[in-house]
Length: 207
Image (cartoon, rainbow, N blue to C red; front, side):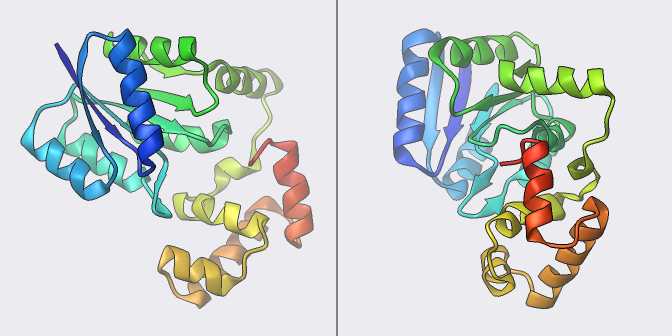
């Protein structure tokens, strides 16, 4: 029997997904709501599939996914997230995930995703596949793809016009460092202010 570990900091999400999968998959499923619990479970047992969000308590999980894959390369990982833009998703695919499922997915998409990944396939939901096809058809470079992992992490805060001090506190980096990243982001995106950045983000469906 396949062993799954569901990790989401929101109990209702973790519990709901666990109950749903228990009803539709023949699998042994564990559920945790903190990174510490997840790490302990991963140390204690061998899992075939690990499910987590892109962020936990404002911390980006990209590096955590890389570390987890390095420690257990045979284990599949599905990201279950509210983020629906392919530019962000590509970062996680490059980190080694086997599936990306949005929290807007319906029951059929959720069960298809888990069955596909457990059988050794890669899964992206239909909305993300459509974005990928559109990018390939237009062959146009999404400027957000040029951003580093940390810059991508800062973008949502800038789009909300969060003060640099607030971003600094949330990401636990110095205010001047945030300012440096902001300048780099503006240069790479070729925008002069937040309004232009929002307009560009809207054109590329950045949430």
